[in-house]
Length: 79
Image (cartoon, rainbow, N blue to C red; front, top):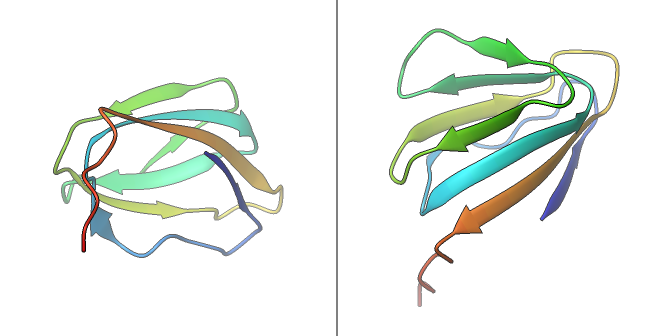
């Protein structure tokens, strides 16, 4: 999945529903995982976020943030 977050945009705080692999392809990612202090990751960084990890993703920078997100295994459908 290709995600684009302009300055100030964020994803709602949530728990990962699978193992998540995020690659920062543009900008700088600001993320907090499982209540740990917020960290920043530059373009070219690959993060592995385990299943059921609480996450808060935000773009706090002027440059647009672009991520490639892969979930493996595919999350189960919720009906």
